[in-house]
Image (tube, rainbow, N blue to C red; front, side, top):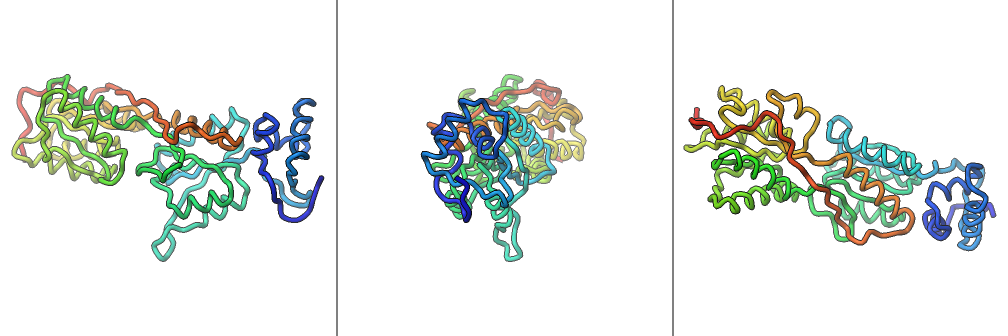
Length: 350
């Protein structure tokens, strides 16, 4: 049944579903691999013939069996490292091969470039995991047009309707961080959030506000700042908080990177963590353990989120559709050395 020309008709995922096997197993049969049980080979072969699957001609370069792409915003951060670790581990368990790339980049005209997407579709990936801030409607349309299923990991803005995503319980994390500081006796608790339009940051601030309300404490707008999830923003916003007539005694930074910027600002004002001000972060990145003092933070299960996304993608590659589009994994507080009971004397502006 080998035909020439461009392949049309059902995808390998459809054939695999009809035969009741995984996509990698169906691919082994198509490519003549011997490590398939006779009965399984028979069912796949019958499904191939029944559905009219068009195999690639011998002279074409075959698509690697069970190939999936993982597209991240950067390869330099420990955040992306944790995501890749979880995705690779789950892919190995599923017998899949992984290609890692970054994207999208900006073209010379300032608009998102599509080179990464062209390469992704050209190599015939069976599915894609995206760890990007967001996916545009045009990018989603191109993927849908090629019949490539995809799952987003920890999108920072609300994904388009129908897009499957895996994230963390951000509201719960904000509540846990603030409750911890309140239990230590702090009443003047500030929060430094990320970008205003990103739902993950707003959800963490909502958890912060809920904890204050449950404790019967007044919400103080001047204690809410936005630092963009990076060290520079945390540093700048902490200096602003210290210049208030009544500075906070504790700060919840909505990312570990911002918490490190908070540390720098406090050091510049000759204030000590946690003797003068307690600090809680969010993410539990590796560097949080090596900060001085070690950072109390909310653990976001990055590797587990990526592994869950990979397993959902495998189901979608087989033709299944998850019941819901959003999967949330629990967050938990990791107590270290950056928090302590409220000091006897409060910090004063410098």
